[in-house]
Structure formats: structure tokens, C-alpha cells
Image 1 (tube, rainbow, N blue to C red):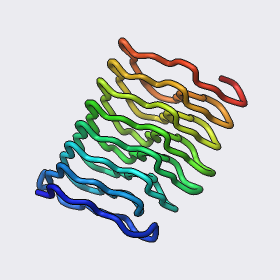
Image 2: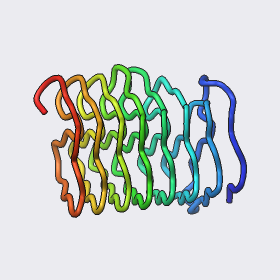
Image 3: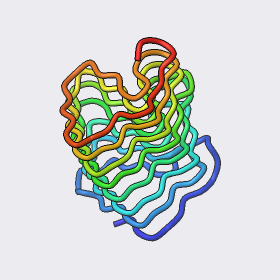
Length: 193
């Protein structure tokens, strides 16, 4: 159990690395101004967390989830940046299974990469409900979300006011998605929607 602390520092390393399959519980934490969080080969649950102002030259500015089972509830991923890689807010990859409820992915930036808010790839499944993916930017495809070869059910999700330099201002998908009671408003792209 990780609970009730703040991680700060510089951008040279991840603030928190999780590599355990024993259902690690992470709650009431803040990860501010470091290299974000890495969850790899793990089973983890995160509640009531703020991940903000992180910068990473690697996958996922705020958070990277690889080959893991993760539950996120009441988590804020705000104003994170990834440089020359995908996933400004969060990068989810390699058969991961992620559930998000009441998650805010806002104002994140993929600088030279794809998926400003979220990048989802390689046979992963992400179920998102009661959440917002708003105000994110990608200098490539998928300002809000880039989904490739994965599954993405959205229920009551706002995918609004995102921007991409290339395709898909709000959402770029090359896989399976189902959107129920969700919005895709005021998204912009310089090239094809």
C-alpha cells in the first residue's frame, strides 16, 4: 500500500515504478514535476491521485502502463508532456487491461508523438466511464485519444476540445471502440478531422 504522499523532483527519472503482480494499492498520492509513473508487468489499483506537470522522454508523459492490469478511479492526469514518444497523459500498451472511472485526462501534450491525452496500442483493452479527455494536444495523430489495434468502450466520457496537427483532433481509431452517452465536441485537426 502506497498512501498519502507527494513525489517531486526533476524530469530525469520516473517518480514511481510499479513492477509487482500482487495487486499494489496506491491512493491519495501526488506525482508532480518528475518523469511520471511507470506500471509494467503489474496488477495495481490507484484511487484519488494527481499526476501533474510531469515530462518524460519515453512512453507516457504522466503514466506508462505496459503488460499490466490496472484500475484507476478519481485520478487526475493534467499538464503532462511526452517528448518524441506517444501518450502525453497516459500510454497503455502490450495486452494491458485498464479500467478508468472518474478520471480526468486534461491539458496533456505529445510533443513529436501521438495521442496527446492517451495512446492505446497492441491488443490492450481500456474501459472508460464517467471521465473527461479534454484540452489535450498532439503534434501527430490523435489529440485526445489515439487507439490502435485495441478495444475501447467509452460510457459517459467527454472527448472535447482536443487538437492534433495530423489526423483525428479528438479521436483517431484503428481498432474497436463503442461510445455510449459520450461527447466529441470542439475537437480540431489540421489534417482530416
